[in-house]
Amino acid sequence: MILKHQNNLIECGTDEAGRGCLAGPVTAAAVIMPPKFKTGLINDSKLLSSKTRSALREIIINEALAFGITHIFPKEIDEINILNASFKAMHLAIDQLSLRPEHILVDGNRFNKYKNCSHDCMVKGDSRFLNIAAASILAKTERDLYMEALALKFPVYSWQQNKGYPTKAHRQAIREFGITSHHRKSFRLLPEQYTFQLNHTET
Image (cartoon, rainbow, N blue to C red; front, top):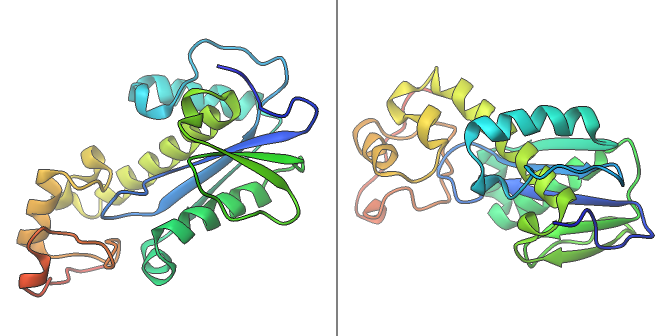
């Protein structure tokens, strides 16, 4: 894994977590790691254990030259769609950077231009570039912490385990208890959704 793509520019990596979830925010992070930073542990957050991600989160926060993390919540996701919400979350995370990037490296194949800053989209960039991998870890861990806290208020959905993703247990809970304000109502929450009216639980 290499640190950056444009070696002569101040470059940040950005990535999101939670795009495919039925509930909770989409969360993005932007990170600029030091030029000589090295660790063999940082990788695409999806390939790491929860324990490893948590340990790396602290290292990244302590060692990064700059980082930012942002949530976009379900109401706005439903209003602007998940793709635009993901781009907006990344832009807001970049806004938080205390060091202004001259180039942005984005995980994936699409991005809305950020101000007058150049960017490159990198498919599977979170397993190729250190700045993107660090961003993926911060986005994932921040979102997981949010969903674990939310699960204390809504235990029937098992968000402490599924983090809002469309697991069998999550969908069964939607069938039994309806939905909350934390569910994305523009998403197909159940395979049979269009055959009946979803109920709303306390928010």
